[in-house]
Length: 127
Image (cartoon, rainbow, N blue to C red; front, top):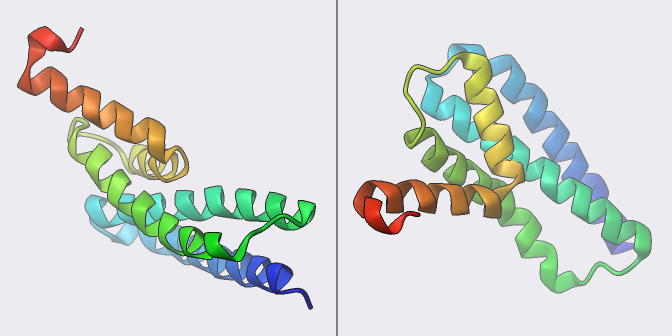
């Protein structure tokens, strides 16, 4: 078995198991933990999509493997940051949506958080 295919199979298996556990556990967790798990699941989704494309084309470079390992963690951290700048009266479904979106679209979410902080710190320069 090619090492690229082995990484893809292992990654998708771990991501799928994690997603199922997250969905089962989310209702019983506090919102901050729920959004972190959902952010990690969004990061797994983003990585799985990218990894499958690169393995399918046969152009996955070994030096990118750490990116696939850390993107779910970064997704969880970004989801927590986004949750902290949103109104606190959000529903459980909104917590899940915030986490998944933040984990999947990490760069866009960081830009959004940056704009929110700039608007709070220096409102005149946020235009």
